[in-house]
Amino acid sequence: MINSLLVHYIESYGYPVFFLAFSLGPFGIPIPNEVTLLTGAILSSTGALNPYLTYSIILAGLWTAVTLGYWGGRLFGQQIGERFRHNRHFQKAEAIFNRFGEKAICLAFFLPVIRYLIPLFAGISSTTFRRFALLSYSSALFWTAAFFIVGHFLGGLTF
Picture 1 (cartoon, one colour):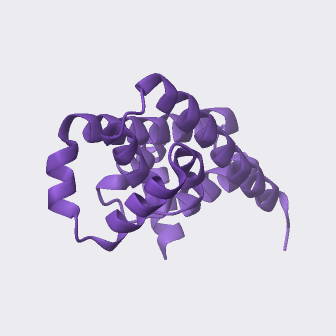
Picture 2 (cartoon, helix red, strand yellow):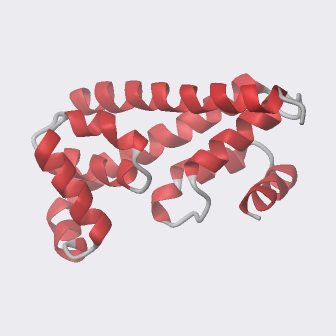
């Protein structure tokens, strides 16, 4: 269901769907990143999409989302904290960040929903943007590459 909806959007609107799905993911796009990433990789492996362009757009979308999250935390941290204090995902992300500190920036990419909340806490905390960018962008590169490789391999299988 979700996968066919995603394929429909890709057929209709092309590569920007990947960028929007990742960059707007924290704002309620109802398609999980893992599904979007695997779908892009599978379609790339079949020749329907350019794998380099698809991967680059996905990565750029994710970098955009976490950067917006960081700056949102930096600029509006107190207001965001007050508004979402009782949200279970927000509480979980806060607990992870408090427990692991800056290491949470790397770990968050492997936790759905949390991957978009941890940048808020990095922005709220004393983490510099340079440090945040180094940790988050390199972690995003690793996370997306791992999923893209798996999806590319799965797309090459014949059942």
